Length: 377
Image (cartoon, rainbow, N blue to C red):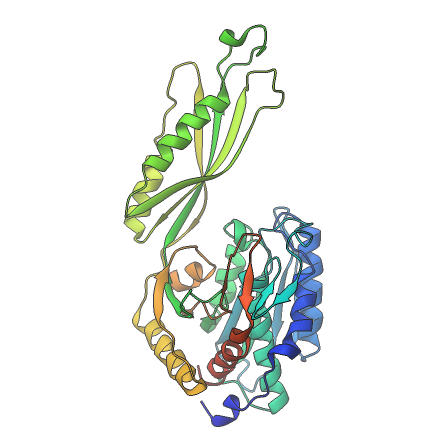
């Protein structure tokens, strides 16, 4: 990395207004129009940098994606893909209990940490390189997607097709708690469960009914009890019943399993699909949902990590690496064998909660790290 990158005039205070605009455009996965508004904002910011903008229509009821490409002398050669998601887990209205605000060295807001902050510093890294006239080593494409928080059911094919045209993938998902980066991720599988009971009047004929809710509660306890050091099982969504004076006919739930090894996840899938109801008078169906494959560290990924570590040390900090849970779209590209480095985004904590925040002091060094990588990889 040439010295000019170290001297680029990144300024955390100057980044905050633009990041505020991104965060205050709430973009929950299940609101396609809201995600579209967020993509419009990002598209304009990237267009101002001279990128060629393509909005890719959403499907399956989810929002659109955004692809931005930059002119380069080697445009026909495999490039660098900067990949992030613009959807968040926070529903519209979260800005009321979690407003965008600065408190000391922290910026709070829905999606500020996961992962609009990382996406924003990636765009800022490109902006600073262009402004300084520093060329990137390869053509750069930015891909922002719309459904990562629910496992990328509508975008996996797009992600894999785009990544296949690139030599390197950089993912500005949040940094690890110690500031480290991610060189592999665990496998994740999702499941949809439905229990079916027998309705009755809960006041007059309670004994005649068989509660789907009660059966689901039994299943939840059994599922989560299967957790071991190799595989985790959790139930994060449950819906059942319609009237409190009716014994529930149906109850639906969503479960997630995570494993460090693909064979362990495969065994977990078999376990989940083999679940049976606890009695003959109730029914249970389990269907497999979105799955993220294991991304295991490889020599190319580790070489990219060492390059990143060398850049970080020149900037003035060090980075560790690790395989991590909490899947990302890096699972797909890493599992494809494409050189991928994840966790390049901001430091912070509280993702997916009303305490979500980033650390302001991480904005400049992490943006410089991304700029350095774009210059040399």
